[in-house]
Image 1 (cartoon, rainbow, N blue to C red):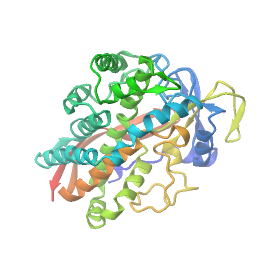
Image 2 (image 1 turned 90 degrees about the horizontal axis):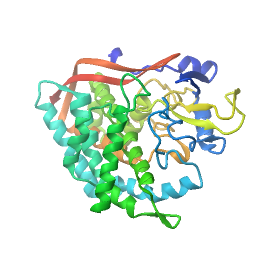
Image 3 (image 1 turned 90 degrees about the vertical axis):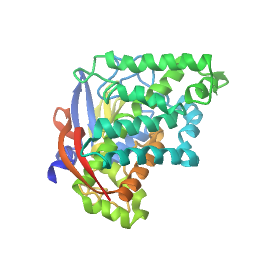
Image 4 (image 1 turned 30 degrees about the vertical axis):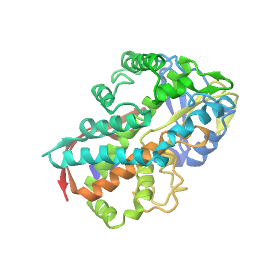
Length: 386
């Protein structure tokens, strides 16, 4: 089904010049489109910094709706090294704790069982959002019931649908986190808020603002991306039933399949950096204090690296994708996301014979010269029981 494919919006510009431009609220961004340039720039944190004004490396910019610095995402070495070391073990729990894996399996199994019992289900709100929110309670180590609050926010709580400079929706999250931090101060427990409040960095306790910065990143960084990845996975298997059948017969390729699907979907289009000195990218001059973006979605379709980049090869052998970022700022939540997707693929293969698409509305991001389909705003399907 061609209308369920995710075409490469960047192919022509990537092959012809290697970069593009987008005007972001009057602040121009040079989009780096080739994998080699994206990787090289991501590693050069001295020339291309993350620790600029809070919100400026995000595209669209969040400088008008956020003053809190996301940690360790908007921090450069040496501070970044210390912050990352503080939280990395916590975010690796999905691969080290058996109970964590079992609970993810229970959450997804319950959702799939419900889906196969219905004549139709809307995937974005009624499956992917619920899965993401319920699984997040495990990552934060807080009561499962709290997920109902996050589900009630809907899929777009961090940014207004109408304007990137409207902070009303973002304030829902910030006020929620402030209240949760105050609660953890008064009644400390074993949740992430409490762990951060009791942690030390460079011989001192984290401030409330620093804790808030970690929590904003934890909520915002893994919401739309996981929802997109889950929704696109279901759409892919609806369009390619033979691939679902293959996973049933060859479960040993599940890990490779997850990596290939996230390469192809690239749930996050790009992420920015701020240039610290006059330099050059893609033979293109970049002035100090200008912005560039690392276009993960384009890099992951680069034919210079990936054979048949616009095809999904579930057992792709060489797959140096950058869907989870690259370099020191590689996604902290990647372990959690990979577990969710591996588990989802296994349960779909075990319980679902096929998926029928009944209706959908595409989610197309407008980057001016580029129109990128990132997934779906709405996807109605029928799960057929195996």
